[in-house]
Each structure stands twice: as structure tokens, then as C-alpha cells.
Image (cartoon, rainbow, N blue to C red; front, side, top):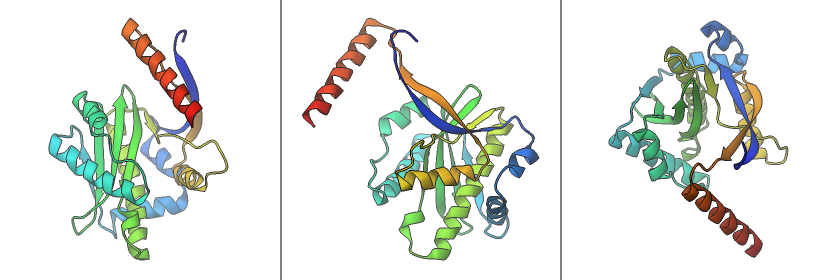
Length: 219
């Protein structure tokens, strides 16, 4: 669009308008097994938070911050996530162990017929116990599947896994790609961008662009 700045990005999506059985059949065999085991033998509990209140939002942020610290990532942006919640676009979910312990949280931005995964956090790195780490891995897969079913039930047509690394050098990102591939989605290319609709908007984006250019020059 004229007047805006846009850049391409890749993501992976799953068509939720398909029959439930068809969606499940496209998931890799081993992943289907782990989902079923999570539902039966592990006794995992699925919790969907349609309209997060301040208390639930704080629980999620604290959980995410703990996860982020183990990966040297920035803590949750409270202002941004709070604005998503206020606008009614934020949905949260979590997988709870049979001992009533949070294992995984997911956060989605929902608009129109699309749900995009914003954040996924787990307790995976907090234990050296291989059995527990495997449980958390199953809980994550179980949670993705139950999220899909819930969103499908609400009339959401597109389940967006929140990005796709198009490179071949970053092993950590390639590992995330492999995880997303397990769910049988389709890789697509889209665009991120900003389009000013007022004088103030144009001024703000111009100043921010100049600031970033100056920072890049100094570095």
C-alpha cells in the first residue's frame, strides 16, 4: 500500500475449516500418539481463558517471565499484552498436570477468522529430569491440539503458528520449525507493515525510522 513500509515474513497455518478427523490425520503419527497419551495416561487438563482478567494475565506474565529468563529473552511487555486483553483480542490457554501444576501456557491474538500464536511458554528448562521434560513436550503438543479444537468450535478458520524461520543457519529456530511441521500445516509468505493514517502517524514513523537508522550507523 502506498505510503507504508512493509516487509515479507513467513508463517505456517492450519485450515480449521477441515473436519476434525482430517486435521488430526495430517498431524505426524508420533505427535498424534503424544497427544493421545497426554489426554489419557498423563491426565493433562486443558484450561481455556476466553477473556483474561488482570489476575489471570499476571499469572501468565509471571510464568512467561520465568520461561524467558531461562532463554535470555526479554520479559513480557505488560502494556502491550494488557492492551490486547482490553481490546478483546487476547485468548490464553494452559496445560495443567494431574498434580495441578502449570506446564505450558499459550497466548493468541484473535481477529476475524484468524488466531495467531503470540507466545508459548513452558517449564521445560526448569528440570533436568528427562521424564518430566518429556511430559512437558507432550503437554505442549496436547495444548496445541486442544487450542485448535476450541478455536474451530468458535468459528476460527485459520490457526497461525506464529511465524516460520526461512533461513538455514540458526539451529534453535530450525528446531522450532521442525516442531511446527509436526502439525501438518502449510507455509505461506505474507507481509508485516505499518501504514500511517494521520499527520501525527506519519511524523511518528518518520522519526522512528530516522532514530533506528542513527542507531544502526552508530553501531
